[in-house]
Length: 148
Image 1 (spheres, helix red, strand yellow):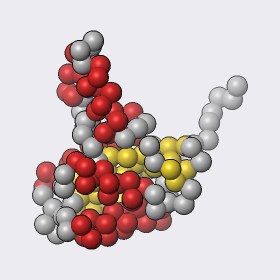
Image 2 (image 1 turned 30 degrees about the vertical axis):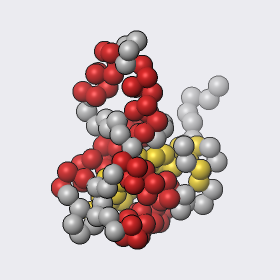
Image 3 (image 1 turned 180 degrees about the vertical axis):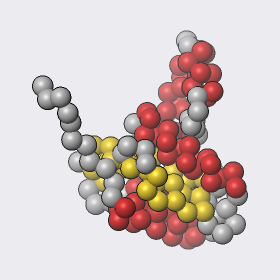
């Protein structure tokens, strides 16, 4: 077994395409959102807050994207799993909520190329369902991307 591994990450060009797609979709929907795009290592690659986006959405988008990188799945899916485990392990649920940089509501999705997590995009400022829809459309802007 090798002592190192190679890991792909989203390029700046790819991150910009994801960001542009998210902003265009939000504008089409008449929403004012913040969008954070991270590389696979958690580095912020692209960010924008649309005119009219709330200050709270800025930090929330970043936290949603970071959550995706930390757990490897969409924030909506992660939240559902936590809620399902709450009855059995309430300490896990509350511990995760208290952890720095964790968001447990929809709007953050992984960006996968060839099945490998290469980044994350998160949207905040609309409803969780709208944030999620915008993020999925944005993630799909990278060629070969499948989200989930």
